[in-house]
Length: 420
Image 1 (cartoon, helix red, strand yellow):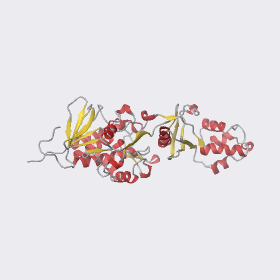
Image 2 (cartoon, rainbow, N blue to C red; image 1 turned 180 degrees about the horizontal axis):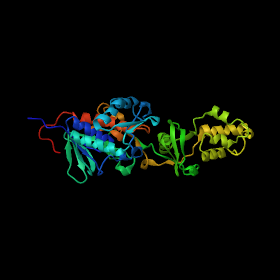
Image 3 (spheres, one colour; image 1 turned 135 degrees about the vertical axis):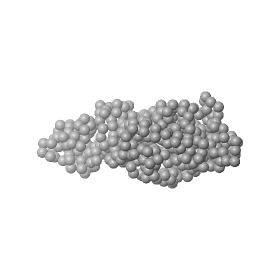
Image 4 (tube, one colour; image 1 turned 180 degrees about the vertical axis):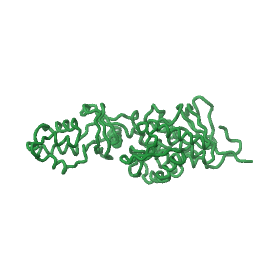
C-alpha cells in the first residue's frame, strides 16, 4: 500500500507563505494554502510603488535589525544565497529581473508587481498546492500529534504540519492583523516587543512643512542611549514630516525610543555630501557672492533659504560680510542639523513589523518551532527586518523556502489520517 502523503497547511498567501507552499508541494506534501483576502499577496502588489523590489542587487547582512542572535539571523539568510534566489525567480517563476544599479535593487523587467504575485501563486499551483482564498483562520492547535486549523466559516482542518506565514502588523488594510503573532504568543514562544519599522516620521510643529514635496539625497542619523542608525539616501519633505528611504531606514530608532519612554532619540541630518571642510571653503569670501548663492548651489533654493534663516543669517549678505561665528553656526546646521520630530506614521504606513518571535525559538535550518513540533514560523512575524531595497522580500523568500521544504519532508502520517 502506498503511504498517505504528508499534509501541510500554510496560513497566509503573502510572500513567505506562497514561497512555503511552493516548496512544501515540491517536496511531495499535500499542501493547502489558506488566505483571508480574496486574492493574496497584497503587500507584494503595493511594494516598490507597484513595481515590487524583488531582491537587493547586493546583500549586506549587517543591515538586518534584530534583537535576537545575529549569528542565527545570518545562518537563515545564508541558507538560500542571493544568486540562487535570483536564479529561482528568473528560471523557476519565469520572471526576468532588471537591475537598478544606482539604488542596488532588482525589479521584474516588466516593472509590474502583479507579475511577481501572480507568478508565485501560479508556480504554487503548478507544483501541486491548492489555494483557498477568503478563508479566515482563527487559531491553530496541536491535537494528538497533529494540528487542528480552526476557520471562521468552515469546519476545522487537520494536518501533519502548519506553516504560520500570516505576516505582522504593518499596513493592516492589506490583511495583516497580527494573527500569527497572537497564535505564537499563546503557544508559548518568547516574543520581542513589536514596533512599526520603515515608517515615515512626523513633525507636528511643522518646521519644514512649507517644503512639502521637495526631495534630495541626505544622510540621516538617529541615536538614543541604546541604539543608533544612519542612512544616506533619498529624503522627502511631506505635509506631516519626512519620508523617503533615508527617513524610513532610521525610523525604528525613533519609534522605539518613544515607545520605551527613555531618552528621546536625536535626529540629525547632513543636507548634502559636503562636510565641514568643504562648506568652510565654499563659504569663504568670493567677490560679491552672497550666502544664498553659495548654499543654493548645493541645495534646493527654498531649503537653502530656510536653513540660512535658521542660522540667523541674512541670505542676501555677501560672503565677505559673514562673520566667523555665523559661518561656523551655518556649517553646523548644514552638516549636523537637528531635525525636529514628534512621532511617526505607525503601522498604517510601516513597510514591516519590527520585533516578533525570537529567532532562538526556531530551528534556523527548518523554521520549525522548538516549542511546538510540526509548527513552522516564517516571514515578517520573526524578529528580523532589513532596510528598504528588497531585503525584507529576501528574508520572506528564504524563511518561506526553509519552512516549506522542512514541513513537506517530515515523517508521513499513518494511512487514513488525511482529512483535507
